[in-house]
Amino acid sequence: MHTTAFRRHPKDLRTRLGVMVLAAVTGVLAQACSDNSGPAGPSFQNGQTVPVTGTAPTAKDIKVQVVANPASTEPGRRVGITVFVTNANGQPLAGKKVVVNTSTNTKALGTVDAALGTTDSNGIYQTTVVVRCNDAVDNNGTALLTLTVDAFVEGASSATTGGSASVTLVSASGNSPCL
Image (cartoon, rainbow, N blue to C red; front, side, top):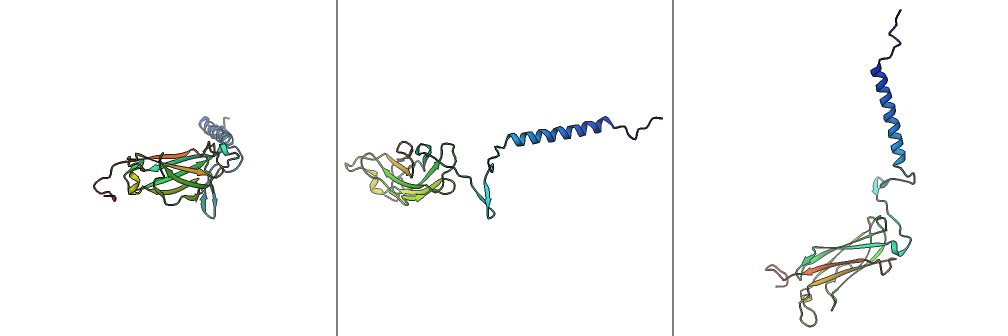
């Protein structure tokens, strides 16, 4: 007498074996991708996402980048300035004091709207610079072509302040506030 009630179909066995192998591979990958040292991304506090911020044990670990937008302007216009402060691993440094100033080789140029501030939770400080109409020439009457925006960050060494951006001054157009 041949009973088929206890015989397993080969397709069922392959399906179960496949599911077990898939579960084992998933578990191994999950363990391998985790450093088990805390959250792998943003954490949550009071229902809000809180970005993970870094630390910088030495002044050399602080990296500063300054971006001017637009990179060229005519006198009488505003330029947005964004200062990015990160550690050597690219993690944002929150709560760092920032000082922004402007200059050329011959004189101070432009007015920084908020020259002093603190980086936010993303390591960013933003302000604007107004290039005044009378800033288009230096003390000798020579046309100025470039404005330099520097950012100095609390705790950064002078070698790593690293923060400067250039703004090219262009001739006033027909709708310039300086005409």
